[in-house]
Image 1: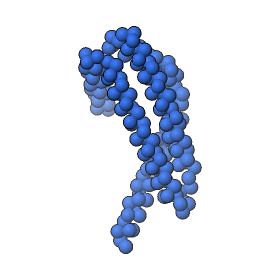
Image 2: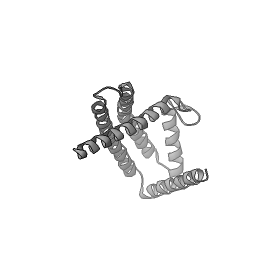
Image 3: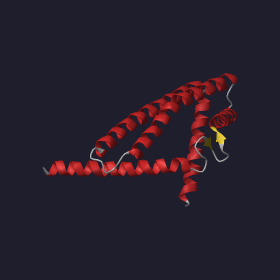
Length: 165
């Protein structure tokens, strides 16, 4: 009997913690400094941002025209693949916010939303991994090494910036 009670407490505690975490993320969404459809500090739309990212990658890695075309196609395909998943994730956040926490079926509904979100995150993670693999197939070994080096430099810069605070 005690074990069942402990399991219920653990489940409710986890559900409440998840609800608080998801609620704060959902609250931050529309209130972020760059707005819903914009990206970056200059408020570029996503297509413009993707184009600038491709240009930056092209100049730093020395991509050929064929590689640029392949990268652009890959990035556009990834964007088209991820958009419905992101939209569905937003829908789940709205659905969770609409739940009545005092309802008797609240834990069950919350668990259902959490399971659906976990599946979406799984699909998104696999899609991102596939994109990374395809991108590595487009780049030469030298370009992959340069990209890895650039990633490490960016991480070090980020760590240094936020370690000082």
